[in-house]
Amino acid sequence: MKKLTRCWLIICSCLVSVPSFCADSLEPSITVFAAASLTNALQELGDRFTKETSIPVKFSFAASSTLARQIESGAPADVFFSADLEWMDYLQTRNLIQPQSRHDVLGNRLVLIAPADSTITLKIAPYFKLAAALGKGRLATGDPESVPVGRYAQQALTKLGVWKDVQTRLVPADSVRSALAFVDRG
Image (tube, rainbow, N blue to C red; front, side):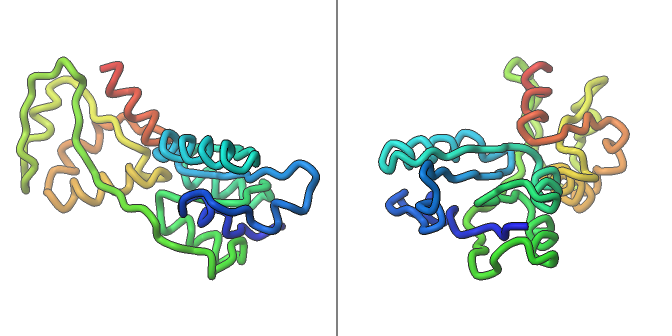
């Protein structure tokens, strides 16, 4: 299996050069596996990189866990943007990344959102009334068993003392983008 390379550094640093491995084939390209939450930002960077270098950037967006398992199974990724340190660790312990190419370049922030027509206002604080605010509704987030945002939400809501009140009312999504789509549809 091919170890992941440093291409992502090229994409993140003003898109100015081509890694040597990309020049090895007659039709070079870069294949980026990335957390679904990064879709818009990385597609924009990839488009700019391609415009400046004529090297196409191909993307596969999904949950970090799904992508890590695909890489482990031999998927041809040149770059991996994980939304979760644990899945990057998973690949590193299996010698599937080049350790020197691993860098934390992004951070996450949890937000609590509601559909645009919602009139509910909540102050997030210990023991806040999230379950009451949901009424008969449900809480969409990533699946806490496999999606980083779901695990982070579980950790945050546990620390705030409200997880037990809402855990049976989850709509677990396979990615943050799917969870956003659930909220958008109400």
